Amino acid sequence: ATVCRALESWQPVLEPDIYPKIQLQAAPSFSSLVAQAYQPNQGDQCGLYKVGFSQDLYFQYIQYKTLMPEMKEFTLCYWNKYNNHSTDHPLFSYAVDGQPRAIYSWVSNTERSSYYSLSVEGHTFYRLNYPLRLNRWYHTCQCWNGKTGEWQIWVNAERVGRGFHNRLVGHVIPSGGIAITGQEQTQTGGGFLEGKGM
Image (tube, rainbow, N blue to C red; front, side, top):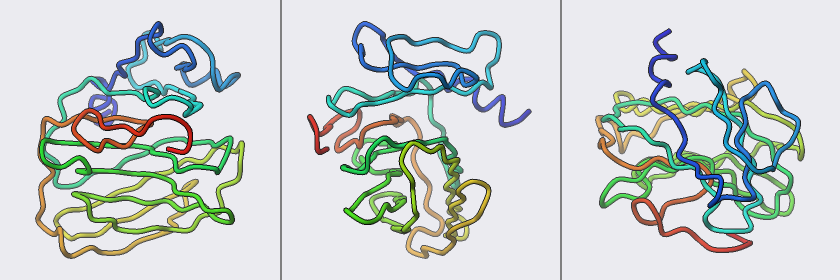
């Protein structure tokens, strides 16, 4: 119930007329990855949403409409599926004034491998090789504890990485920033790379 209440304010900002190639659907309907409309899950504030990006255009992203609190720790969980491994995939970006990489989670790709990565305040904690197969759903949770410096990553309910980053022990991520899925912020609320190959 606590998690549910925390998610109530996490409603995506998405204007269908501006984003014609993107679909956001309530979770039970996994029929199509890309279509035309934003459909909130009526009556279920803890419902999941699905969105597909072609990443052809720099404006394909979701900005979350919520006031972000100060964070001494966090857990970021999401479902993800990829149609290609030709470019990097920005999963979550939280930027505050003066620090566009307050939190940044992404999957980077080479010709032979895919890697999960997470950074806080521009410090990359890990680049973890993981065999992400195309057109397959993965449930991923990445977490960081600022009190101890510990980070962990879980994929499909299995812990696949754990470590410590002592440099940020005691660090607090500032409140009031902008949270985005689908793009890396190189400045607060923008600075996105344009076009294919982002």
